[in-house]
Amino acid sequence: MEEHPVSEQKSVSRRNFLRVAAAGTAALGVLGRTAKSYAATEGANGRIRMGAIGCGGQGRSLMGIFTENKDAWNCEVTAICDVYDRRIDMGKEKVGGSPEVFKDYRKLLEKKDLDAIIIATPDHWHGKMALDALDAGFHVYLEKPMAHTPYEALAIKKKVEQTGKKLQVGSQHTADGAYYAARKAIADGLIGQVVWTTTGYSRNNRGGEWNWKIDDDAKPGVNLDWDMWLGHKWGLAPKHEWDPDRYFRFRKYYDYSGGIATDLFYHKLAPFMVPFDNELPKRVTASGGIYLFPDREVPDNSFVLVDYPSKHTIAILASMTNDTGVSDRIYGQKGTIDLLSDDKIKITGQKEFEEEFKAANNGQMEVEIQGDPRPNHRKNFLDAVREGADLNLDAARGYAAQVAISLSLYAFRQGKTLSWSEEKGVYASGPDDKGGANAGMRPPAFLKQSGKPSARKGGTKNWWKQK
Image (cartoon, rainbow, N blue to C red; front, top):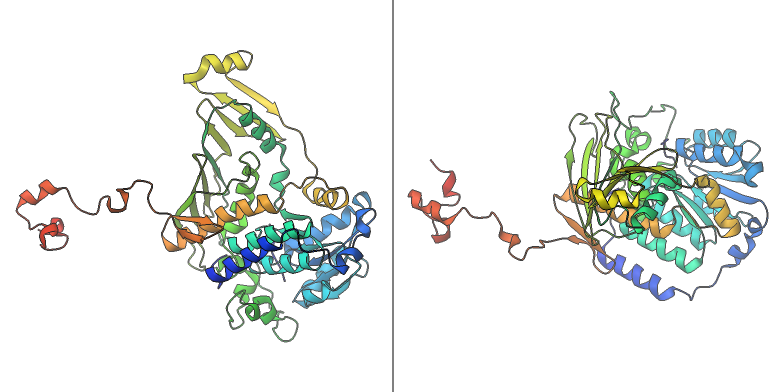
């Protein structure tokens, strides 16, 4: 399995989702630890042994980080898994030594001498692999996005609650101290009621984003297990004939990814769940499209609005055809927070509230606050496993981000504004205004005086457009 450096229609019925969610709730506090979870506890006091599923670009990057810091962090990658032989060889080279090798991740999860699992595969496998690893008694470092659907993200969150295992979603931006400084500034009332936020992630690649190199040596049935990669046996993606573009450039296809939303928006929205307390969205709408690169299913430009119950909107704007992006900025009634580099924020007061803002900030209308640096995101995971440290991006925070991101993808594809609840799943939001459902559906009544027949009285439909 693989993911390159750095989804979304799935056959999960609402009935099945509700059954799984209900079962997860009923099992809270009931399930005991498995024998394997007892066996894999040596890392709590000593060296943490990890198995890595996915030896693509991002998987090898993670293996390299843990391996380069194995002495300082007291950890080791001792087993690796991928469906493609060449990537297994590349993974072995990255970790050094003689890691045990697997082509079926289920066999890796049978090992009793591991403490944690790294999952860095295409998005459509994240949910099942994470749940299987947790069931097997392992802690999990799960590359973003948390899952391919919000249903899976909810199931993962509940499974973490059941098992007590640590799960860190791999978006390192949540280790940025600026977001924690912003949380404190908002809690202290420095900018008043928060009303909206802007963020985004833009790139520009003349050949089209995610058009990574295709390896002509990949041969299904010879050195690559294509059916396992698809996961159609478990309903993870439809059965499909071998297509190297789908395998090597999976982020362009809805069956395996969500494109901009799941690759990039997750990096930008997840850290904002720090100041906004993992709030679930009220509704989400999205626009954009394929403007320049028709070689894909996912949009190359995406623009999303996420409304929250706290009366706050986050605008997430991204283009893969122009790399001039928008600022990470939080707008309040009394002031504005800019999130800067090096764990800093800048707060600028609003003119309307100048007197009180200056009184609270030593006569200044602009102040800079230094946030506290936080541990490396990967080390934070190990600290949580070993010492119970608070995770930067735990299952609850990862779930909150995933719901909004998945809704944005579905909203774009359906052309609707969508909402989520754990009881109903994904559903159409509907209007806030009781009379809004029919707003604009008929022309003003006085226009019938123009001599055209009234549609309301059975006349010609769309009469106002006729000559």
